[in-house]
Image (cartoon, rainbow, N blue to C red; front, top):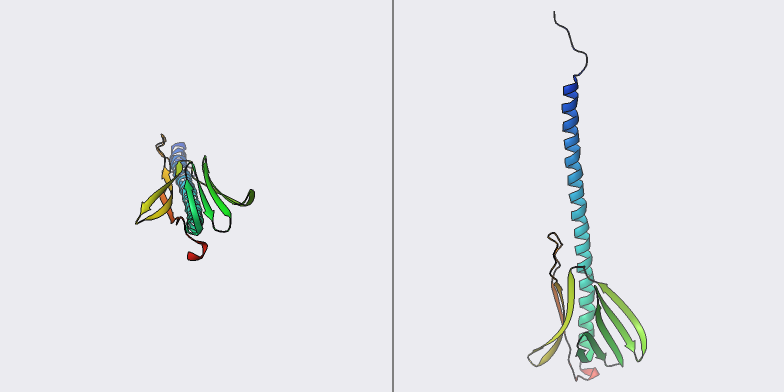
Length: 165
């Protein structure tokens, strides 16, 4: 006589539970990886936008400058008695537009935690270029997100009359 089984055995139930929990674990791992990747893409895009905005202002200020002083900070002197001061403080690059002692405008550009910025100048064909470099600094974290290096240069024509632009 054959008897038909109406239920599942305990072993079958445990096998199904093990397979379902493994599949859920893989789904959770995949979602976590996707969220981290999306977050890194968002940070990278924000860094690109910030660097682009900074480069646009840097080049415009350098081109409009009649004088440029580069040291720990960079100061562009414009023809209309304005000065534009760039300073690096921690993970930020500050841009400050002054007329005399009054601050007219102030911008702040955030850099990634693993980036460092520096000012420099270079001579090329008798022209002075003001250079702002953003580099990745050495980190001891194995999985730190890399920083896109950027070198922003603008021609700082010294001793130029305001009408020669």
